[in-house]
Image 1 (cartoon, one colour):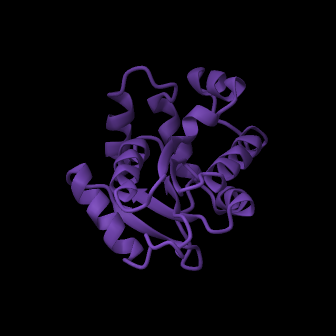
Image 2: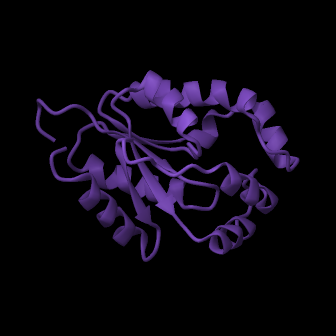
Length: 175
């Protein structure tokens, strides 16, 4: 990244099980090689305890639950001094608009994974608060990126390194 270039502010988005955290962390690490100070944040760590308790109990979050969290995601994305990659579901355009309100230069990477694979991935993870039973509600809520939104859609297939390479190629080289 040149001295005149703005810091990268990327949200890796998709439903639970899409690989947001794994791909986001690897993307941040790869981009940090070219952008001093760029870091990674998992938006799951920004959820208030009440949201985590609801999800652990198998209760889907409503918009009233999500809005303060999404505002925190946007502020966190905007305040990374060297840029930031953040993993966040950002399932609906209205949710992405909340993030963009706090961080207008945000760009989104939507990870695309078949529904049956999402369920298998979520069902196979240990220790995460999101149960497999909520994957269907996330898919019902999901609104993919619109053509007028700054971002790219990437199939999360192959190795993490292959997915990260596709993300970087799709984002372009002018960063």
